[in-house]
Image 1 (cartoon, one colour):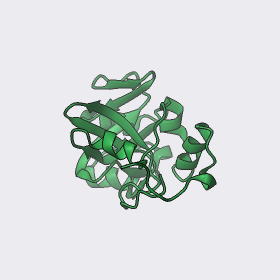
Image 2 (spheres, one colour; image 1 turned 180 degrees about the horizontal axis):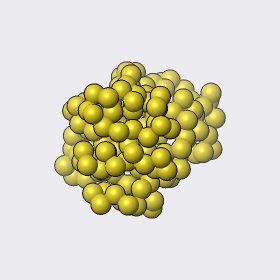
Image 3 (cartoon, one colour; image 1 turned 180 degrees about the vertical axis):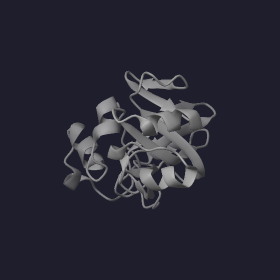
Image 4 (cartoon, one colour; image 1 turned 120 degrees about the vertical axis):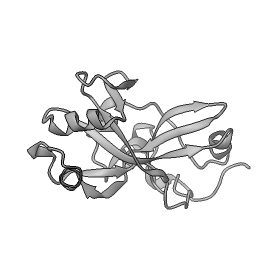
Length: 170
């Protein structure tokens, strides 16, 4: 929501990967990092498919920003967990190396993640800090990062201009 002033989460779209009694974990999927696949490949001595040049990595959240999480649609990667039908999460260097070479794979590589302690997400939802909806593979992998926040809000039947910047119930 617009009233969430934390710069780590202002107008972000978070793909929630885990939510339970012990807390929650998700990846911000619409905040580009100042690092491209080409630069990553060069620094790690990894081959990067030509079409990946210029594509930016994403800031997945403020926690452990040195860790990488790859969201992708490649069924051929052995090390993967299915997040949604046709959307997978991989965290190994081997998976990343194969995905960077694959010209056909759609991917979002996120550095870091967003984490919440037990009950924190529920409290923030009650305050009106977040909206939630079901995610789609296409929305995660194909949406323009500059437009995804507005697209998600509109897909919920909400006009983004009508969102107020005051808090909800405490």
